[in-house]
Amino acid sequence: MTTWGEVEYTAIRELRGPLAVVEGVSGVGWDEFVRITLESGEQRHGLVLEADREVAVVQVLEDTAGMDPSRVRMAFAGGPLRIPVGPGWLGRVCNGRGEPADGGPPIFGPTTAAVGGTPINPVRRDPPGEPVLTGVAAVDGLTTLVRGQKLPVFSVAGLPHLELSVQIAAQSTTGGEPFCVVFAGMGLTHADASFVLDTLEERSAAHELVLLLNMADDPVIERILTPRLALTIAENLAFDGGRHVLVVMTDMTSYAEALREVSAARGEIPARRAYPGYLYSDLASLYERCGRIQGRPGSVTVLPVLTMPAGDITHPVPDLTGYITEGQIVLSRETHAQGVYPPVDALSSLSRLMRKGAGPGRTRDDHLDVAAQLLAALARARQVRELTDLVGQAALSPTDRRYLEFDRAFLHRFVDQRPNELRTLDQTLDRAWQVLLTLPRSQLAMLPTALLDAHGSRP
Image (cartoon, rainbow, N blue to C red; front, top):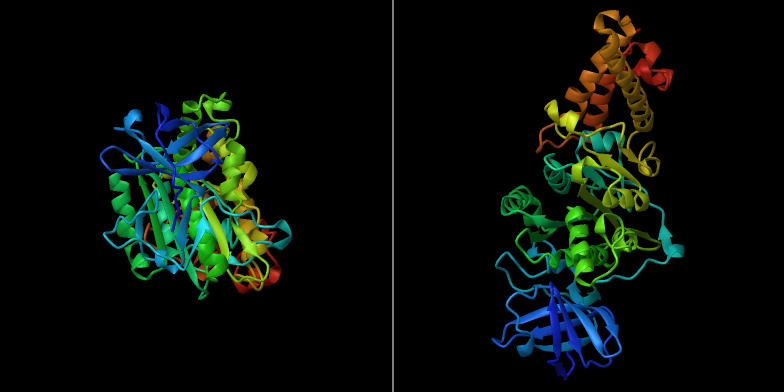
């Protein structure tokens, strides 16, 4: 329960976009939670972005539309925004501020937690380990997601990144251990939100899902709060509740644009592409909240999804995300144009922690060898395709033609699957073997002889 100060301030100097500037305040600190009362009795809420001498800059979460600065009262909580945490969130659908959107009662919990989070002591961090299996062959087979990892999806407008993120949220599992998903949607259209709700209905009914949906017509400022709420809920479910939690956040580009809007309203000097200079540290404050803690059974794994404006991977949002995270899953227009779902560009994708979560004792003994051979063969197939464009297919050697056959088989028999198709890891790796065996044995040098014999490799 938030305890409000007895003093209410009325000296609102100006409203500037989503910001309100209050004068004559005392004892107010950064990140303090604010209650705003309008003349009609309507209440809104905000956070203190800046406090200097007797002036505070307040970020209004519900926006400043309809507010008359001469008829507004503000009370300060004396501390940061806190929310109730606990298993009561599971199975609920809320807006981007954490308010119920499913017609249910307010969410209560045995305790509260600050939305800003508490950094994990590096000494107490356990390295990521053990897989989170998504049921998506291209992810599980080649860029395995590991518990405690942060692995972003890089996409472009028009590609099915929302479908992929929802499929991963619906299908992911840790193999019998307590598991749940926190899905944070930012800037979603109403059609997108309906799709998310329909697809994830079964997982929500099983009380394995928390849904936070910030709509495109909601105040932009709310998007800054949504991922922080999601991570605060996830941390409690993981480190106090003992669950393995997957946090899916889409679209982080919408989040960054909201951050840019607030920065412009504050009159800050812009950096690259008009984003604030602290974009790197702000993104890191979100992504670094994942992980595992020594002595506690749960884990928080983060899958941020972001669209690259104009497909530019050097754009500040994907560029800085790449520095902070441990790999990336890249979606490709070319693969999408061939009718393949999910349109993953396997050679541009990478999970830097895959060896921590895959292989003997974790997934299957042949997993890492098969993945390495698939990628090596795919790189050679890409070279052959480029050669074909120059000299024509008739001039290729028999082996090169086999690589073209492999390339087609890889896309249509291994990567391509239905948006509601759940593939077990055994099914994924068995398909990988079928694709690899389209190549002659001499081209499979990265696989042990015993494995080749066991799978009937031909010359």
